Length: 168
Image (tube, rainbow, N blue to C red; front, side, top):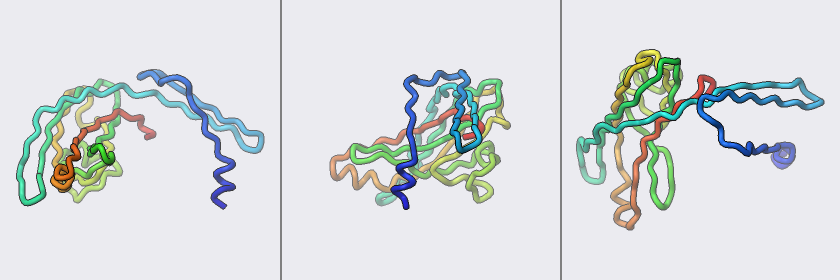
């Protein structure tokens, strides 16, 4: 029964904001189970520089954009999550995008046709560019802004690059 499962679930709130670079560990102890412990380091904030946004084509109600951006990767082994958010005053969601960047395609677990990544979230590591400035291009298609604009709803696209832990 779903309600029985829900009744045995507990939520704990951490009353502090995590600090980048600091190590946090958690230990869970219950008399009926073996204790478990986890440890992670909060990744540093990634400063993203958008170098260029180009409208490649416009046909009927479809716009094809290319965004070129860069960021500086530190000397340590790093892992990243890339997402594209479509934000309207009606709702916020993640949109699909394409990239033929080798570091995204070569990372484990990436949906790809062999030459182009396609999805709404790319997880990748810095193995191919460790300690250097990395530039990436993504393409995305805007099919819906026309309908939102007709109704007076503002559409915003937000490129989100997050440093994540390896275990993410």
